[in-house]
Length: 224
Length: 224
Image 1 (cartoon, rainbow over the protein chains, first blue to last red):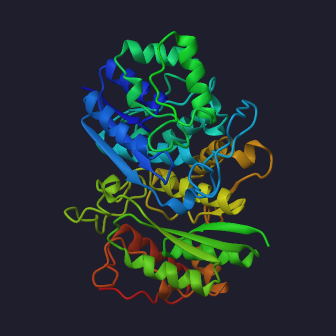
Image 2: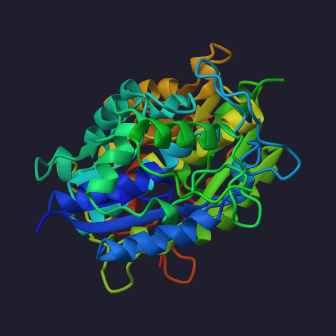
Image 3: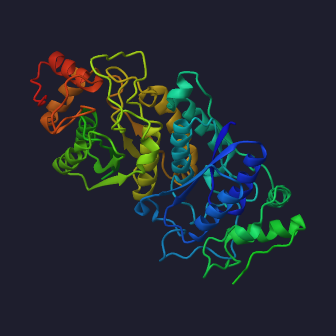
């Protein structure tokens, strides 16, 4: 049975991505990161969904928070922007080199366990404008990875970075996940939840709400 | 004063790289990693040299060892190969995605502090054959990094990965460092030192010995 590493934040997109990888028949090795995010409740939900979708292993890597402290997503003195979603600008929730670090751990993990697929739930349609979610970034990452790994240089395996959500609208992601059995009440998208409840006003909440409306599915998110 | 992030292992190459970055007038932000390497004595020497060359800051990141346990460099049950240096094969001291992870932290660090230079002491002449030390890998990494970072996407800065040693012979590296004041007795190259003394037989010891011989400088390394 072929193995896949799945980057799993515990949000709507990565959980859907997990369900897709599972439906394609892979043995799942899920990978999450604790980098000081305000919405760390997502890590508990990542664990829940890794279990639900039968992951062989689920690792949570604790990253040095100081590297990520310049973002409103991690710095408690900065408020995440509210009610001002703008698809053309990179918001202050941007975390420097986040996906680059996540994918780099996934590469090490993949080569160590012999997985030639890495699943990442990036999306460049209904998204927050982060540069490291775009197709051109992923393609450049893949090219770099091919030159980095012993296995690929020796021709033993070709690493593939799978981005099944990259050109889907949020409503299409939700529809896909629903068909694969994802329970979205067990995912969190909010950047700044209060006592486990979604704020309803950050970019991520706005995109999620609109996605549910357009999908026709009921949004079971509990808002403040 | 422009800032540079310097990847500093505490070995001969990275210490020379540090001295070069300093001589070019940069404010130095040094970055080291504890990933369970057998030669962790290098981390103490990294700290020493960061201080000696006046680094503004020196961070040592502790990485999750499990990701790197497949290498003879980290696994105490595997012996590093001895007296069998072969420049055409990738040895078992290879650590999956090591430079990719190191550079990814350097990217996050650089963007956070506003440094547009990252110095890495990779070398593809007298080296152990690791794929992530070659010029084509570094170039692919740079292209990926340009697409990853907010600052470069917005045109605010262009990240540059500086590899001043990449096409130098070991003897040339030593000569360069000597002129810049590097004390090589305060660097460690050995992959498997015994009580702080170099084994003299691993790939890294062999390259270092030959380099000193060819440079004409005295090799002050203490061997077992």
